[in-house]
Length: 169
Image (cartoon, rainbow, N blue to C red):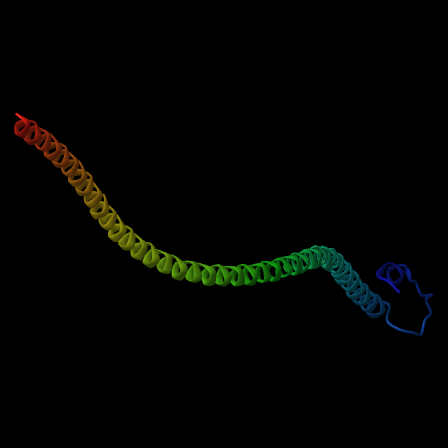
């Protein structure tokens, strides 16, 4: 039932019955109430449509946000995998560095030993050089002595000849 139906209702008239003014007043009151109800229903319908539109917009936003959350989760998984890969690589490099540090320590020890051996060898070489110089000096002296001895022998021979020649004369 709506206000237009109430407005169009007409009752037949009889002598003994209800007061037509009261009935008309009551019908006008019901018509006004129905019109208010219809207006409120229409307003509520508009609000409902607005709320449905807002709900749809919120649903769309929620869908977009859910999509973004899924993308963020996928990115998070990708980054987590990359971090794990980099951590493994870092551990391998740290192990390699430890190996290199061990090799470096060993090399430094070997270098120190080699330096010590080099110093000892240089010292021995210096001693041998000095000995060789002394040997060369001795040989030089021996040559000189040999030459001097030969010269002295030659002189003696010459003197001996001279003496023999003097004796003969």
